[in-house]
Image 1 (tube, rainbow, N blue to C red):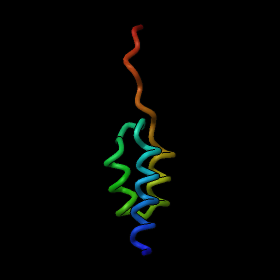
Image 2 (cartoon, rainbow, N blue to C red):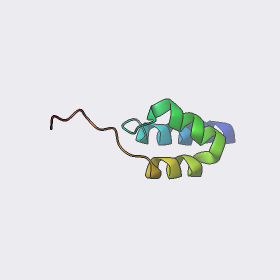
Image 3 (spheres, helix red, strand yellow):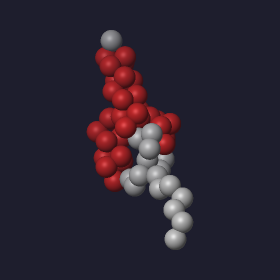
Image 4 (cartoon, rainbow, N blue to C red):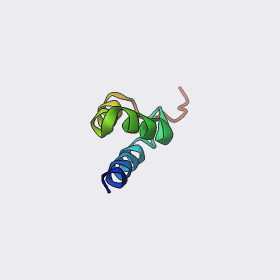
Length: 55
């Protein structure tokens, strides 16, 4: 049961990272490997994806 909650929390963290540079899957696997706290730290440290802007 703990594993299910762990993966669900990692999934939610990955959803927060969808519009970040690394994307959903990178944050999902990072959260699995580094614990969810590590995933949140990565999201906080990363930049959002920029849209192409004309100068």
